[in-house]
Length: 624
Image: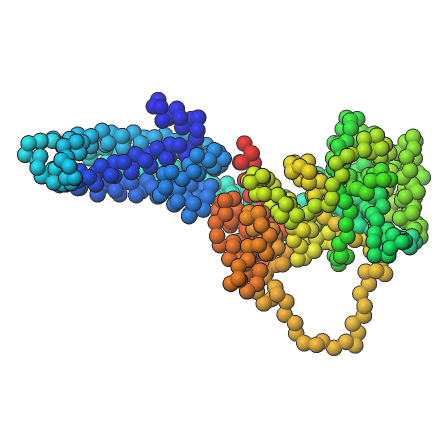
């Protein structure tokens, strides 16, 4: 095993590629100098240049697995490019090659060995370089010494070396070709598999979040004149098996009596909600069955639950849409009450043994009754005071929504008790992803961090499109963190959407009867040919995360509109690679081959298969 092969095993593919490229360049320079020694060398040079061109093309195609064409060409043309030393890039290339990495190293190293043999043969002509007088040219030196110095050229040896180079290049070409075909087949298989699964996952979460919002809005009422509004905050993280689990918190704004223009945010109301899709014949049996399944699957040890803080805010009320759900599923949504003097919301990680068991017991409890009150806000507040009694005694009742959804509310005693025992000192302001773009330098985040944010944004679209949680023309400013003191996986779990809770009367629109249309009005989407607005703004979000700048900062004077800015920027390569660039362009044009209606499962599945899943795989490959 040669020294280069040992280094390749340790360092990956990039060092071997660079050494081979350097060797090709060195031999090319030598042949250009000594080709005047004989006609045979001129012929050898031509054949060698063909071998070198093929090898460089193969290197460029390999590098395009982890970068765009321009970056790959720049690296090939510049042997001093710093990207040759980039360990992350080397790791990404190794992950992209997968099982073919060792075979590629062998083929490249074999080419390097053959080039070294050719360079050794050309050393015989160094005599002419050493015999130069003053500023004499090599050609003049060759003419002067041609009779005195006779160098024997073994043409068959050169031809054998050139044949070896041709074979090694062919091996590398075939390996890359096979890898491309296998990867394409693998991608198609994975997409087909994901497309079969994603309608259930995305559709179920979407329906669960929509039904919970509808139930809260239809029953919500508050007689407190100081309460200016109520907001619900929904975490992006959701789990789907036989159930859907969502994390939610409710907060309210209170008008200051001394200053009508100022507001104070009251401590949030923390509850736990289990929502079950039931039938009309045996609703209680379904509740008991689904509740017992959750205990068997998801019980945890009785340990402290970590908290992350967020500050409440308001968003405009959005229209709702009802979706029929044919399967029986369960949604678990968790609230928590904060300290009275701390205006913050806490998202917890998971249920504990005691709470899960209490939920199941509560479902079977005969005293569970429907919530029927004129002031549900006050009703919830009165029912969540700290106490030592079991959670079963503090079931607050249930709300029913259309299509036989039952939402059972109960107090999570242990969570609130822990909040009082362990108050947090790191309360921070509400921070959106857009704020992060402005406040944090791009160098402070890794490529994996950027991909994780892109993945969460794509999940938000798949799971919450066409619901009050996500506006059609949403932006990264609509996705909030719980705390931005540090950016890590814990912070990612706090990403959430906010929607304002409205009563039925507040949601009613003024009548338009008798009002004549003033004429046809074309939207910007119509004028600029946006096929799906929600997915287009997902493409905008991916662009902003790739360049770590808001779209407005990427605009130039010649851009007539930010929509055209997005399309112009999408045509440029990014450091996140060509696959990411292709995903972004697909979103901007809604080019998924299954129409433009995101309400249809086909497009939801395509977005999941062509956007969410590839981003997940990119994160996995870079996190090795």
